[in-house]
Image (tube, rainbow, N blue to C red; front, side):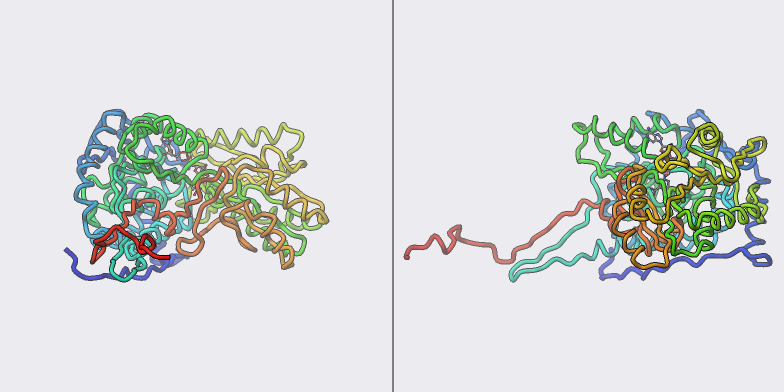
Length: 545
Ligand code: NAD
């Protein structure tokens, strides 16, 4: 039992390795990729109450840039395993929810240090093979962001535990941040290991127990987190691992009376489906479940005529094509004034000429493959649509080849109307659609940008002219939850630019910030009165004028 008041260590962002030729980290990552490639693919069980469970219903994880290579097989959960996990979580809750908060947080500070050292190259190499990320993209996901989430959320949890209430003479007030009564369902997407790690651990830090369903396409990279957490001292049953098909796992979990929260990141349609299921089940629950969902995006870059075209072109290349455009924050549409378009187009052409797409273990490649066959079909479907529709014209790229891996060339499409299908919908691939607007129509184009897509996640204004920046900040006030001035739409840092969007992009609970952490407590206010009242009569009831 901790008898003192403890401070949480001040958080700092994890420094990034650059993997330049000759660096020790470059040699280490190449060695780790080789080690994983030459190992037999693991058969990954579920983890329920700390016990490995094998259902015999096997799924497969393949390497996106070499789809003949099976990285792992994994057992898939169904209703029976969900019921067992709910029971195991309930059992674990008794102890975990009553641990000293400092002991709980120590587990995650240790996890941060382990991820920064012993596990760094393993998590990065697994992410490169499984998500087809370049070494830089893996480093800023599986190393730095993942570690930052642990350290900053520990800091926020400390602040939540250290709330000081006002006091009046004669009484003592306290806000007790109780864990939720029940379990949290964490459902993660394929694209970031850091998100797979954060969705279950953020609620767990505050004493909650979790059922975690990872994305089926990345069970290989995600399952290493279980080893990391166990080594850091996370007790069995606090996070239960339930890979499997979304509806097969989701439906029985959402029907549980002890569902206390949903921590989701993924597509808008899936979140809406889950919210509807929760609505249908609302009478069953012991508590109203907390619903936190970060969903799709249609990141935009608005270029003003006063900008330097080279800066805009660099931001477009990085924002639209890194990690094959598979970030919710990716730049997916751009508005470019007619006066700058010829220069921007030539700069994009020169950059795209240089960009190589291929196996990410070859560190000369700037891009890898899209995650799986359904993603390849979806993105090439958009390319096909652009080819045959009257209001789009492919300017660069457009080629795709899935012979060995799911490779799609970086593609720039010009929309001849401002509100076309490709300017509207999330594509989640390396496709940038550009609308060239008359320079004099900047103000109207801000309105078009705001009204064109249902999403409101990321956006940016490029301008040297300050009044234009001001107009964009006002005109696009509700168009993005993360807004950038003269920067690309991707690369938000934990602790610096809290992340999340509204409209169809989510509940905007700002992952990695204290706003998100507050969702995972069920506060109890305690007032103690030292000298209780002895007479029910108030002075105003007295006799006299
Ligand atoms: P997805 O919606 O297909 O899957 C997300 C998760 O939901 C997976 O684990 C999936 O198995 C699960 N799932 C599917 N149906 C389910 C159901 N009925 N019940 C329970 N779980 C179910 O998303 P994805 O393809 O993995 O990821 C890409 C999407 O995620 C994009 O739309 C992207 O914009 C979004 N995303 C958003 C953010 C953000 O912060 N806003 C971050 C990353 C990704």
